[in-house]
Amino acid sequence: MKKILLIILMAMICLPAYAQRGDDDNLPKGKVYVYKQANGINREMEIYFPQGKKASQKPVAGIILFHGGGWGGGSREAFSYQCNYFASRGMVAATVTYRLRTKDDRAAMKDGQSSKRVCIPDVKSAIRWFKQHAKELGVDPSRIVAGGGSAGGHISLLGTTNPGLNDPNDPKGIDTSVAAYVLFNPALSKSDAKDPDVDFMQHLKADFGPAIVFFGSEDKWMVNGWTPAATKMKSLGITSVDMRIAEGESHAFFNKQPWKDITLIAADRFLNKLGYIKGEPTLQMPKTGEKLVVKR
Image (cartoon, rainbow, N blue to C red; front, side):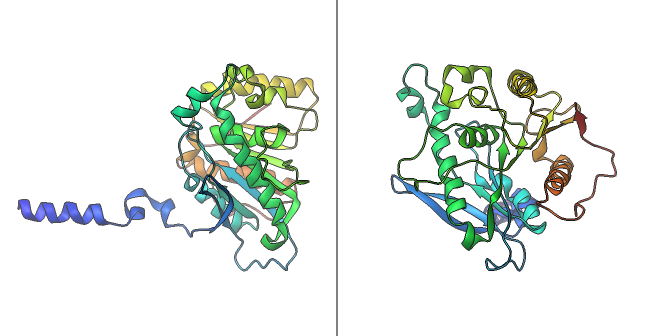
């Protein structure tokens, strides 16, 4: 009996990773590109293309999503499900590997510097690479959407609004501005004010693009970080930010079902209004009744 149990256990250990992790890992994989090298390490971008899409055809809108993980963890696979969906709806969708901060980074920071800053140059490099290769990817560089979850939402905002923290090896003459944002509980913090380079509040301007933002009502990052930003947006006359709340949910709620699909349906309709996606969402709202509430 013990021998049989041992054989079963060994078989489970040897199973492909996707067999143990869940349905999302059975999704088609994107095509992996290296958008830069840093200290001999490849920084990768996994791109999902619409089925049958050829670069020679009319360019489509693109979206780049940055994973969360507290600026020091996580992986690009966190947004594989979303990227696969956006590609199925006609966009070229990318999820990105970027430099993560380490304990050594924290120790090396000067007074007033946040170690979050080490993530941001890669965000800018990724966006520049996406724009630079827009023609071969079949992307319209004037219709690129950026976003991400938690820390990834934070760095996507800073990478597109802060003129600093550039990689000196990036191509010159390509900016990192984007047309719109899809943000999953972006982790903004009042403590960011100690380092202007990581403080979205100090780079938020009246020309901030359209955005859809998702938060759980119990998420402390919303109250402590996003609410002050929303107040400043109002003072600047910004009215193009669509905020959706999942009542009773906390941080990272969008990573689980049915919220994963619910947020995608809302993002789909937001992008449809911008003309980046056509037709109705191909996902269905849950029969269990969960829904997002529009926050005015």
